[in-house]
Amino acid sequence: MLDICLLGSGGGMPMPERFLSSMVIGYNGRQILIDCGEGTQVAMRKMKTGFKSIDIICITHGHGDHIFGLPGLLSTIGNSDRIEPITIIGPAGIQDIVNGLIFSLKNLPYEINIIENPIEPLGINISPKGTKIDSEVSSNANMIISTLELEHSAPCLGYGFYIKRKPKFYPEKAELYKVPREIWRNLQNGETIIYDNQEYYPSMVLGEERKGIKLSYITDTRPTDKIVDFIRDSTFFVCEGTYGDNEDLHKAIKNKHMTFAEAGKLAYDGNVDELLLTHFSTAMKEPELYVEKVTDIFERAIIGYDGFNRILNFHKKE
Amino acid sequence: MLDICLLGSGGGMPMPERFLSSMVIGYNGRQILIDCGEGTQVAMRKMKTGFKSIDIICITHGHGDHIFGLPGLLSTIGNSDRIEPITIIGPAGIQDIVNGLIFSLKNLPYEINIIENPIEPLGINISPKGTKIDSEVSSNANMIISTLELEHSAPCLGYGFYIKRKPKFYPEKAELYKVPREIWRNLQNGETIIYDNQEYYPSMVLGEERKGIKLSYITDTRPTDKIVDFIRDSTFFVCEGTYGDNEDLHKAIKNKHMTFAEAGKLAYDGNVDELLLTHFSTAMKEPELYVEKVTDIFERAIIGYDGFNRILNFHKKE
Image (cartoon, rainbow over all chains, first blue to last red; front, side, top):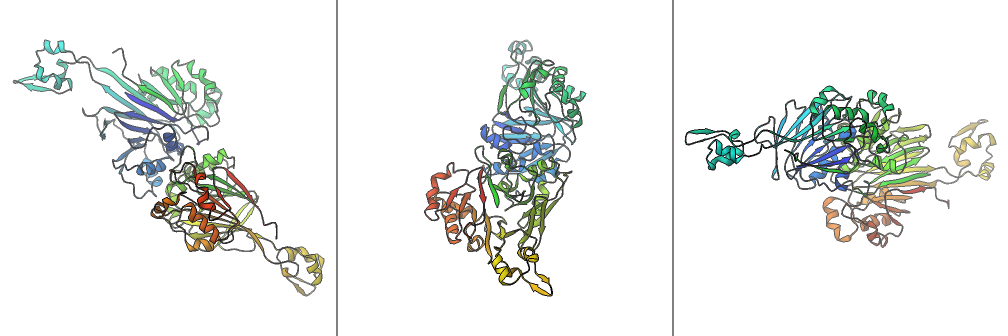
């Protein structure tokens, strides 16, 4: 399961009544943070998500409302006796931006690794002991992080987080193929085994592939066809909805953002299970007033708010 | 008069219930900001001090709790159609730190000038039309900004803000010296005038020098003798008091900060009118509990709080 918390739901500038858009994802005892605007560490403190187990920080882009909280957070994490490295993933140019922001942080007790604009999906192994990141997806990975280039006024990445689900184990199938009991567990774990000069495959004990948990996070951008492909069949789709009112479409186009209705259309076309809107314009004091602009197009839409919390599980039916 | 507002009173890390230590000074329709930690722009919004008339930002030192809000604030000011330049004053090394922090801010509509570790006092002319900064104090200056190197774990400056007060005008003195009425105003404004081949001096119409308004701002540091000289006879002395309890003196020594009692001793030795404590440790939830630690030594001490506001006027007696 993935434990997600929307730390803030605002865009543009930090406001007294709303934190900037950012999300923390908990998995297997460790955490991934998406975006870190000014005040994100304060939101983390307020929502008691903790600092010590953040292993990966995914930055969508280099605009201040998504990154100016980074030096403060890294500094605060440094005060918590952390020594494990932290990996920052971001779009083209992120390395220089981060290095500038953290220029004054001299003696951090941990290493910072930066992965700039990864083209291929990253294979992540997350366990309570820590997180390992591979530039390719191997059988060790229990999470896959994919990225998509978005259409904003700066290089910007959308993120996908996929938790694979093991196929179901069928003892009756194992018996049918006469698999010796001693190697059932190996095959169940995906290994191919030679036993008494005979080769045995995982498919001899396992059912079909099952849908995992797919979390998609898209901000800041205009809607694009590539987004629809990227988010297809997501369990949970977090999407920017900078403007609630359809009348603000011209602002959305000019500033390379989306209206609620446009986000709803993406969710509908991408056949996602649920949509969470975030990154609300500072001018929009009560985004709930515009809820029908999105639910008229995609019913299972939620207007995000600071502290929104959800546990994402595998689908029960399968 | 100086209109001061303590935007935050915390030190170390930004907390949900307390903004980081920072002050805005209003004078003649323009503003000076001292320090800008993460969230300072949110405090400014909450306390409605405005963004548009900030001409000078004084940074005490490059630690995150005093500077990590700078890129966000400069970005927000950029959104307010400002075109007048902003001057940042700070200790040795400030130029590189600021340039790193603002690396991603490409198209600010105004210029940023950085003055690194000024040794001599700066002559400032502030009027509702704008602010001019000279590297020396001329007769145009209506404010003088002085700095003092402090004793912290990074290069750190204390700041003094002095508003000169014109001497009183005495018509009886002007008549005694037979000064023609036509040039009374010129002499009153400090000019020396030749009239009918006779030289006339300001001292022929003016009384003695009068004490101006002196605001001193000292954080972060251990107490030093130089601080006592620097703050002497201040109208208002803002000073760090990271630790309330005398029992925490060893922490103050180790981390190069002060206890309430040490700040009180500086105020007493410096013969200031009033002391305002700020920059409280995150571990000190209720600094008011330790008020007697400072008032036992210096009676006119105030425990700072976010939003503390005061107008500083010339002394009435003189």
